[in-house]
Amino acid sequence: VVDGLPPVSSYLLSTTPYREGSDLYLGRGAQIAFAAQDVDSPVAGIYVSLDGGLKFLYTNAIKLAEGIRTLRYFAVDGLSNAEVGQVLELRVDHTPPMAAAFVSNASGVLALSNGVILLGGESLIFTAVDQVAQGVASGVLTVEASLNLGPWRRSPVFTEGDLAEGSNAVRVRAIDRVQNIGAEASYWVVKDALAPLVQILSPVEGDVLGVRTPVFAKISDGALLQYTLTL
Image 1 (cartoon, rainbow, N blue to C red):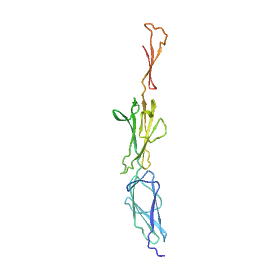
Image 2 (image 1 turned 90 degrees about the vertical axis):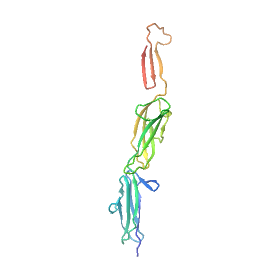
Image 3 (image 1 turned 90 degrees about the horizontal axis):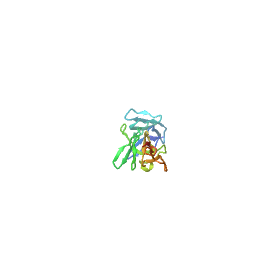
């Protein structure tokens, strides 16, 4: 058998990459494996070079560190026929995006802070930033928010109608395009869209009032504030 042809190598990624133009992005924990085939002779080995380093004999899947990784690889058969080297550049993103929440009303947009009181007409807006780390950022895929420990939902806005009167627990997180999930940002906000209620406790209808008869009244504002007054 005359074998003048080199083997042909290929690679396999452990996760589906995100593609942006010619760039391939991978997330945390991604690995790359190599294989080769030769029609006439057994494959003797696959050689790999990572980021311009010395070539080494490939044996097991390679876990990739964060950053722009350049792999050069080629296969050799038992008759020393060597494949022309191939080059693969991968952008590995281990850093999750960071989410934040803002209050939007007629006056503008302000960063959300714990304990803020919403009087009506406001919306909560959720955004995220995917910071560049080691020269790589795959970008924000989605922002998710949860209200009062409910399920996560992909909504960039909570309107006034979404919030219950009184205290509300708000959580927000972001996911990037290679499925890195960011840490949750948690807030509690108070919706106060109802006017206070004044209730006269004493005297009651039909009582005869004297000059010094005290008046007891209760003023409540939902679950927020309650006062009992003596007049």
